[in-house]
Image 1 (cartoon, helix red, strand yellow):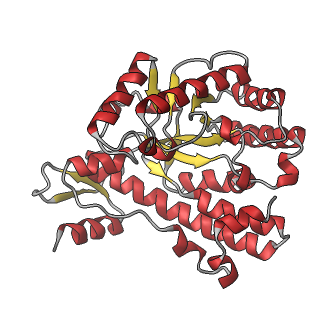
Image 2 (cartoon, helix red, strand yellow; image 1 turned 60 degrees about the vertical axis):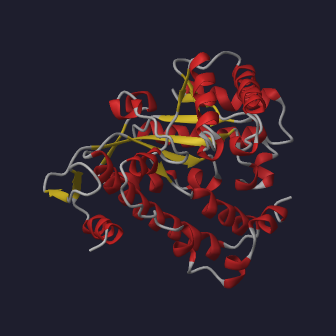
Length: 336
């Protein structure tokens, strides 16, 4: 059996796996189920504009109350969170006082707040100098909006998880972040929730309850499959269950269904820890050379065959052909 097929079979088995050495050696199965933990993080604060109804975004007081409700629920469920801020996601109708009020809610809830650049542009399409200026202005926006530097460790997460298209640009970014006391916020569970969120909000804006319910059903099934995939993949790549860092986005789909989202992690026996606690694990001292999720980077460095994560489109098959064919750009235009 080839490497890809073998790894696919082992992931399908659903057992805890341990990698024993080089890519030429066989996998070994262990009957013991390892302890699983995850840090939940949200990108694109204050608000991903195309992922909320326009009327909600135009009323910052109502929107902030919604955030308070979500954060109260997360605290009730004992789920620490981190949020990554970019001024490109400030609703156009908001002023800095509105952004301050929102970030203050997150800060008071105990959330770690990190820098997600100003423009949310792709480092792979910029010069290092321009990108570093984007990081600097992103930090200035975050601290100005919050009214103070965030408490604790300075975190940075690169848009699109792109940390450089070449060894030189990767090393320059790493040097810049080290010089400015940043810790990169890695991702090991990359959930493509934004695909579902775009369609969800389009259905909501068009009062299509059936469409909304179909998106939610597909999304929760996708979450369950993806979380299981990454949990098992972690054991293959690292030989144990390392603490995970999950990437979600600040969107209406997650906010409206936060209980169900968290439940999908609980079903896979995850406990919830802070980003700071997750990064205490020594595995996060081993930054992979490739961009993207760190799990995939470690996998490539070990020469292991890649097994793709579940594809979102598979879980949207129940939607009508109108939804399936509708480009996201048209969906955004419907919200204007």
